[in-house]
Length: 400
Image (cartoon, rainbow, N blue to C red):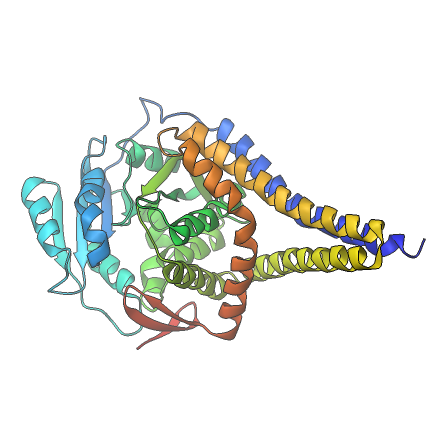
């Protein structure tokens, strides 16, 4: 009997590690199935001001023009786009000037980077100065994401509900040349989508978010941003504190055609985790301990399987293997469910080839997330588009 306790305990722990992610994936599927396939034709379409901060990098210039044309060619009757840069010699400027000459509803401003806020927020606040009295909705896109033509309308539509403070899409990385770093970053990113279907867990993603201008002003978001690093998590925090909801628009899966090295993936995932730790420490702790327990269970299962095999104990060896298999295949099932939901929402975005790669890489997200969490626990310093930041608090940062 005493020999059964550790084996049953290990298997039970493995099941407890697998259950929460699977539950989130099921809820995401139900949420997406119940969501309208498109915004109603008679839905009010208030005038929108689209803010798009840019910081050109050599490896992104290839896709920059196509990404920005995707924003400029939205199927929406009344909107303006304001590009904002922080460097008079930014590599993106030739493309931005070209597009401003082509499109009457595009304009360009240059910001000055303040030392107590991120460059992105400096750009956004400068662009917000262009808001006119008839701009009823503020929409934020990223320059490295390429929205489909209907995504502005889909983002704005839910804001007619007075209980919804902000809406959000979700980034979908599609590696171009591929490589392990690119696919691992994409797999890590996919695992975050189910959180957005839960009101108590979700947040706005800065690459595709919309908010009524009156809500933006009532929540004091511009004042909060004045000394902040994260635009989206800061906005999310203030919107929820005001008693309003943030809603995921499942149809707004925004394609990001990017490649990344393994070193770049580690830096990117570390940065996201540090920002999460500062702005949402409760969620950070939940992920840290949850994934830490999951990884510990895998290691314990491997140790038990090896020890059982060496001692000739079939029971111990089998229990260790069952625990490991439960977590590995459970995590793959979770990933496959999320990918299946995404494929139904946007068949052209999620290919069969990408599905099996992202599913097979799902177990690798566990140790990567634990490494990210440990790194964010030890240091709050990050590098973001070539600029070094030390995140002391949500509204207290140092720029190096």
